Length: 229
Image (tube, rainbow, N blue to C red; front, side):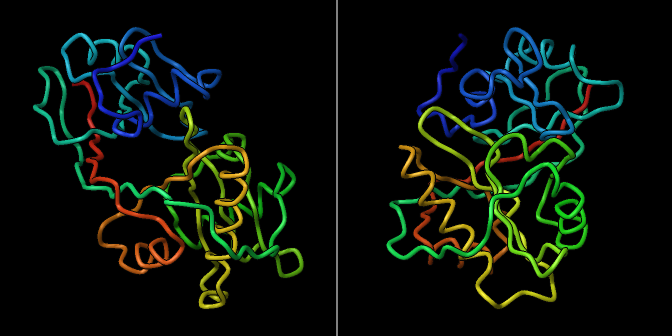
């Protein structure tokens, strides 16, 4: 198993997920790994070398970019073009919440259409048809309509990423996101895992919510979209 010269597994979360607990889903070879695109559109390299980028290119579909979580913006290797680059805050829970709502229910594959509809309306970030297979998802309903959900995506040794935390615009302000997230936090800590998440720095409302729930800023990562020429 390849390990990079990183200070912590969370410094290169996709890599350590795909060589660790989620290696069953991994595609790639050598110094590069990819999630299947219908699960998560992320790739990883163990280090920013020419050899690692050569491995990265092999399993990318033509015209497809690699979306990398890196500790800093790195020089563009020869034969590649950069499409986007933006900061991402990484926050880690300092402990299990004391008060957890029992609201919400576990979602299953039979809820996939309702989940897709909510994602389309609320835009929480990347979410594919097989994303729910990466972990547990909780949801709140109003009849057949899904009003809110939250789930798990990356899983690293000792850590689980909370993701797809979203609420229908008509149901915001009722505490649904806090209730579902705190319940997932408690589930993670009960399993011996520490929950973490990623959020854009300009999403002030989400950052404030996560701080209230007990998440602390760990570091800022850089999400870089790069594609072979």
